[in-house]
Image (cartoon, rainbow, N blue to C red; front, side, top):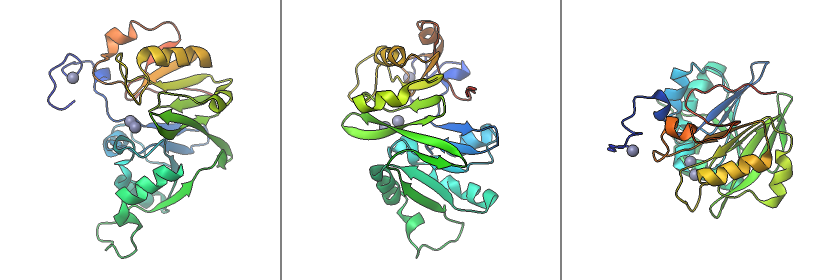
Length: 240
Ligand SMILES: [Zn+2]
Ligand SMILES: [Zn+2]
Ligand SMILES: [Zn+2]
């Protein structure tokens, strides 16, 4: 956090240096799907040498999940095509509003504009022969989407999983769940709530994400039971 002197913000543990939440799903055949495009996308792509993104799927339209969209330009150049982007109607409207210049045909091209092809998601769909399953969640009052890819699911920015979404989370090997902090929050799960979600889903491996500086990595990780871990920037997880 800017201007914070707390132990997490001053920590020398690289796992306490947290960029905005986003993950990349990479399949055996090389296909890569980015989940969210936050303000740190450029730095994340440079650090992790990401040079291929076939599509972006969005969880929701909050700034920490979409403000990197302008950097899609570089992938347009590398891949010589517009970027297919998937999200619910509200999120795609947020992106159109926030990046209005990219959707306005009269904008001077100049240094280049991100070329985005927006799709509104209504349910599961196929991309390159793989099924992408949106998982409806609640982030406070706002409905948002988690995403399931095979035996992996990513459930960030949520504090409630509606009844109809639980069956979509059966048989997972790995699940990632929002765990903001210990104190209650109106739109995010606390660590205890996230652990309860992890137990109910019952995947062999549960990771927590979107932690704020109230949860320093090492001491918090030490409180977690077997099979539950804190995610961190650069973490690579293999899954079928
Ligand atoms: Zn701090
Ligand atoms: Zn959010
Ligand atoms: Zn967020």
